[in-house]
Length: 221
Image (cartoon, rainbow, N blue to C red; front, top):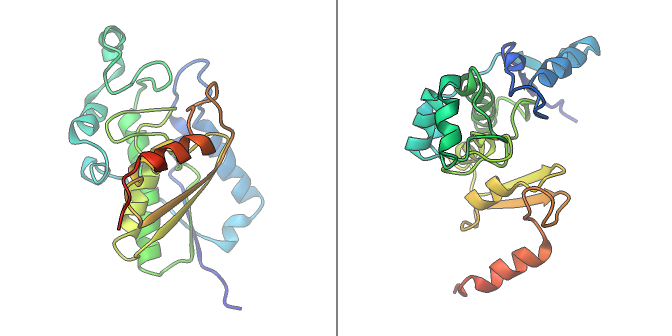
């Protein structure tokens, strides 16, 4: 059996970002994970790369331009203004503004995008980006600690070379952002394993909910 080629992306800056005191999202865990990978010698079985950093143009493959422009310009000095205007792309308590926000998005999105490019070019069989997977971000707003949906951006790249993509999401939360992005196409199938319920974020992902949505859809020939 041929040996699989595995590429692993890591940017040493990714663990230096901080969502704020008491926030459960802690990018520093990415640094800890990377240290475990190297201390266990797993890097010897992979090709390790510092990833490409995604541009605003890359992010706009999926996201609205005004939203991405907002992320690229907003600073911590804008927090008082945003507090008075909570409708600003859903940026606030769960998705706070922090120093280097856009750089953080650029790092994790760029790694997922580069992974998809390498898969398309068939120079690897598996691409790993521990920093990615921010599956709640929507086209025009942040959600659930997620600002840019790197998964959607990566899948759109894969669709350039593949007729169909199967997306499997294994997380305690429903991957609603990815599912919503591809809900009306038959080229992407999303499968999500998660805990669900009206009182559990994001409150979607129940079987009854999806059956209701299907019944609302018009019949297609």
